[in-house]
Length: 396
Image 1 (cartoon, one colour):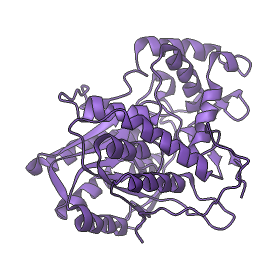
Image 2 (cartoon, one colour):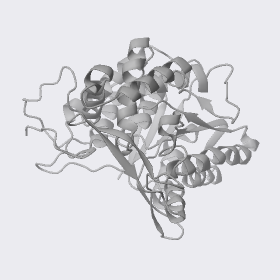
Image 3 (cartoon, helix red, strand yellow):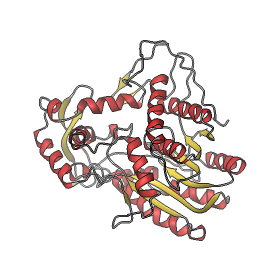
């Protein structure tokens, strides 16, 4: 079939298997040139199919020859209906990994559930024995608690007062004012339940109880802080409370891993175009201005560049630098004073008319479509493609 992008708001409803494959191959080639000294060898990535999670799996596999298990929740294809992009990404990664002699298997299902945790543990026991790294990169809007059955839904809202500022519709380029009503206590509770650290800790507890964590085991989860421009709706909003909880959980996990000399970290990453970030008001405008400045300064990074630098210059470096709150900061280039000063100045100038010149809306739009396998260089989108792609290492 011929697959074209079909969008609704910040979601693309279709995905292109060849475009997703090319995206994955490009990331693999990038990492191959940058081997990791003393990197991980047996890795589990929770949320392994897109964005930072996919980049983490690729970096571990091709930077350190690591065996990898990926857990994710993706929609398979059906006749005449493409799969979700994470399905095609995972298929491309595993196909290439197997060609290159790397162990790679995947589990598709609700990673919040006890069933998926058990299935993953059984696979580790059967094939790897143990793991030395767990990357927690789960981004989901809803969570059903595995013990109580309660369903939580996260929201992106400020706390305390209505937030009003500009945002951009990146499909049309229109800069417009948006107002978001403050979240309630229930909103905060729900968002923390979905995006906080409870499930990360539950994964670690289950894996440790099963005896499948190696000596000197590491685990890392991803967070974001961002500038004052976005803090009302992000870091000081409902999602910020969840990130606070996630970061506090790292210390609890480290305490629980003392007997195996284990360590849990939170990495504060750069603002990037992901399916999750596209849904956050204000963030698309901020990113389009940030991209312009960082590209001009020669310090722009995408997901794969960020995660490769995280592994090579932080997580597996001889001396791991942490901030005052005990976090890894790989957002250091984004948060440079000179970068932020330039973004703030451009923010004041941003209108529908000026944004094409002062921002990188084109770059934002391209990155968004790339997430779904569209607008990828070297792909012929007029060519008929087979939507029925299998993930070779998928466990039933």
